[in-house]
Length: 110
Image (tube, rainbow, N blue to C red):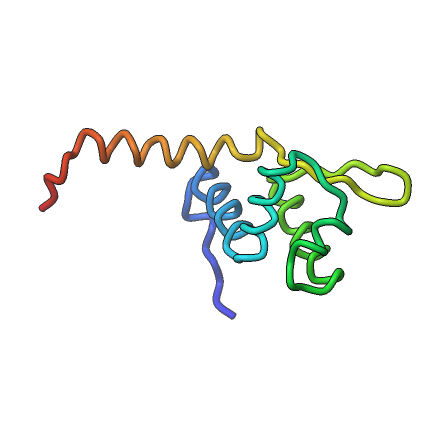
């Protein structure tokens, strides 16, 4: 495997790349979309929503949680997941910058 050379990029660029990587799988997008609909949900319900085995869903949840995009609270013998609003702030900011640029640019490209 090659070296990522992440030290050549800003902390903001590395942070956004981590978030983008966490969202870079359709199962993780499906999990986020499901949490948007239901607000919070235990792992077992998420497993029933996806065509994946429970260990696979758990791994995807772990990736989203490690990236700070979701939170998990223990409720009895299950973990209840919800979106971590603060975790999405860098993504929102990045796309706000793109949106502002596009609105001002008005198709005046090279």
